[in-house]
Amino acid sequence: MRKGSRKVKKIPLAPPAFGASIVVTKTFRYESLAGTTSDITQTSLLDSWFMATTTLAGYRIVAAARIRRVTMWAPMDASLVPVTCSVQWPANASFGGVDKIKSDTSMGATVPARLSTKPPIGSLAYQWSSGSVGTAILCTLVYPINTIVDVDISYVVQNGQPPTAVTSAVFSATVGQVYLRPIDDANVLIPVSYPTN
Image 1 (cartoon, one colour):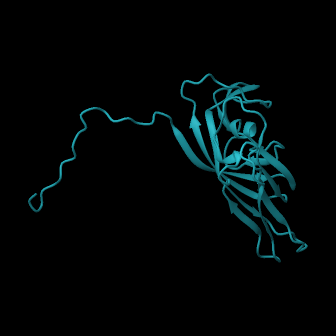
Image 2 (cartoon, one colour):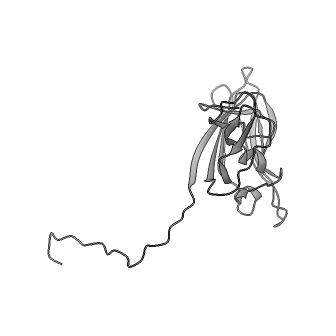
Image 3 (cartoon, helix red, strand yellow):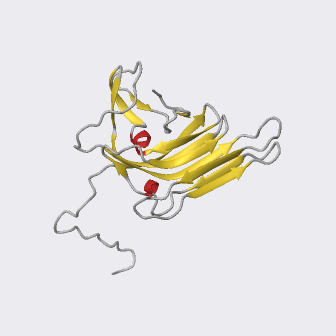
């Protein structure tokens, strides 16, 4: 090849295979309305992103979902009493093993409790949740009021699968509007900067 000439990319003889599924990975932010312990379940994860079909009903936009990471910032207490936040990843009953817990505690008036953790390999949260799954717990979170929780989630967008109605009640929704819901089963972790229902 002479200097200055460009290499020409070969065109394949047949079109190559490609993944037709639309997979979206995004960080969603939530704020806690109360200090409590709550679970992210398979159902609460899959129901968290939906489109309203009537003012009182909606359908999931996603066919499958998977948690990639949970990051938390728990604010310091005004009286300087330490606060703790934690994430517990239950062991997958099919594989055995033990639960994994990551936690942190605030120090003084300037250092919040903060942590970042990924689902352990082999845990239920490490697997894709899809279809009409049950209420198996993917992770348990402990946090004080006003905790910020970022959840990195991969979603597979519906692609010809039969639509699945969200399981919990929808209230005064606008038909055709896409909503985020609380990610936890206690409805305490409210989405930030997105229409909620």
